[in-house]
Each structure stands twice: as structure tokens, then as C-alpha cells.
Length: 160
Image (cartoon, rainbow, N blue to C red; front, side):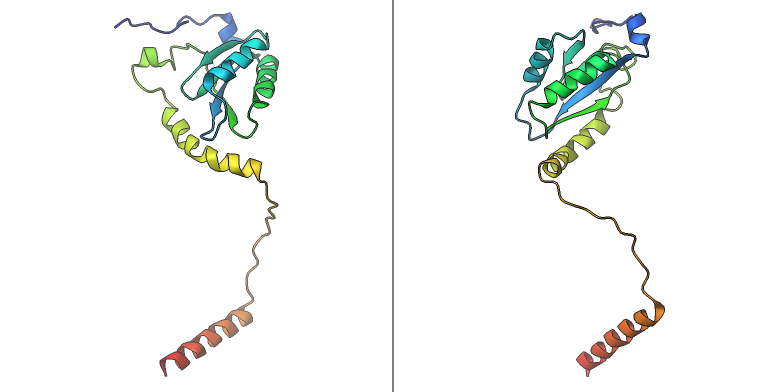
């Protein structure tokens, strides 16, 4: 097997540029679009990006403002089922590329676990509900004693 099957094993200056961002676009389990539709849509935007179709959706790399613009536009295709997260490594990076590692990349199993939750996240985004978080208050000791005495009395009645 050829040792180097990645597109770009030698990192260039662009790969080390702090203004360059790489994000993963992950299709949720209920997505109405395919990986190829996402990739085609991003190519049609005409932005200076590196776009790679993946088994989970796509990977997009370029100047951060261009990457975020592409994500904003592609999300319009299916707003509740397209999720993104920062990758931290450019496409073809030998530190992460499966072609160099000969197996699943680090983080794949984490992403697999996260994928199982995306259907629930999608449902929550489609049907938002108001939630209030109130700090629980302790029951006063006297009230707790009354509750316990009442429960003990009922238990005694049921036995007798």
C-alpha cells in the first residue's frame, strides 16, 4: 500500500495561518440533504475554500470569514439538521489523515457518540419549549417532619 495517500501531506504556509479555519459540517440523522448537495452548494458560492466531502457531511477550510459565510449559506438548505464543529487541522494533515494513520482518526468515536444525540437536538431546535431553571429550595425541617409523620401514619393504617 502506498504510504502517502493524502492529498497534501506537506503542510504549507496556508495550513499554518491563524486566520485559516477548518470546520466539519455534520449531517444529522434526519437530514433532508446529502453530503454531495452540501459540497455542490458550497462550490457554487465561489468562495476561496478547500471543500472535502466526507462520510459524515463535509469539511471546509479557508479564511474564517469565508468558512462562516459558506456555513451560513449551506445551513439554509436544512437549518435543523446541519451541525458544525471546529476541526483544528486542515484537510490532508498527516497528523489526522486516516491514510497516514491506517485506521480511524482520533475523535471519530467521539463524533460517532455525538451523532447519536443530533436527532434529539434537531427535534429541540424544530420545537423549542420554554425552560426555566430555578434553584431548588430545601424543605424546612418542620415541614419534612409533618410529611414523614403523615406517611408513617398511612403506613400504619394500611398494616392494621
